Image (cartoon, rainbow, N blue to C red; front, side, top):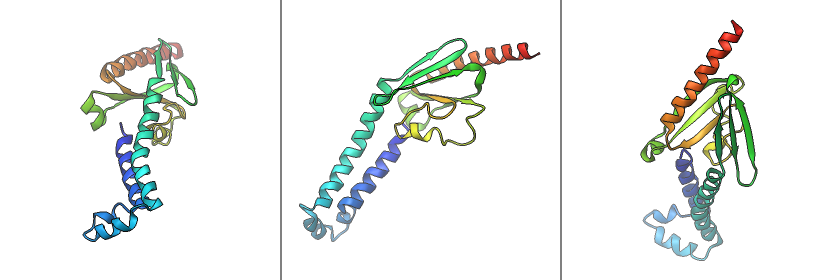
Length: 174
C-alpha cells in the first residue's frame, strides 16, 4: 500500500512531462491543447498516465497472489514472485527484532506488515524499498510479511515464537 502515493506522483509527473498535460490546465491551455492534439507526446503522456499505475498494480497483485508464508517453530519460509521465484528461509535464532507497521492506507483496509530483522539487516530501509514499489520483500537479510489481514495476531504469534527461541538460546548459552 505504500507504493500508491509514489505511483500517483510518477504517473502525473510523467503524463505532464511527456504530454504537456499540466500546461493545458492554465488559462491559455485551450490553445496549447489544440497544438498538442495528435501530437506523439500527448499520446505518450496519456499512455504513461494510464498504464504506469495499471501495470504497477497488476505486478503487485500477481506478486501477492503468488506469495506464501510458512511459519514453523524454528524458522519462517517465504516464497514469492511471478516472473522470478524468490524463496527465503529465516531461522528464528537469527531474528533480532520484530516490528509491526500499519500505514494509513493499510489501517483503512485492515492490513499491516510484520518486519523481521536479523543482525545483518543493518540500518535504514535500503532492502525494503524494492517491496514498496512492487518488488520482492525477501531482498537482503531479514524479511517483511507484507499486507497481512490479521497483522496484530501475526505479530503477537511471531513475537511469542521469537521470545521462546530467545529463551531457548539463553538456556543453551548459559
